[in-house]
Image (cartoon, rainbow, N blue to C red):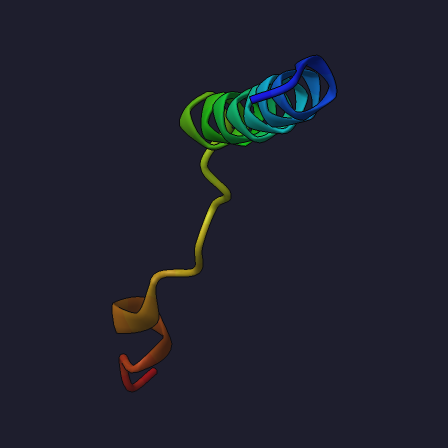
Length: 45
């Protein structure tokens, strides 16, 4: 494997790994959105 192929492979693996870790971190640290209670919507009043 020549040098340019090794650089291309390592950079693409690095970019994919960084993007995966970044979005995983964003999902794990996201604040939950308040959802409406579906049971109170069904109560007859």
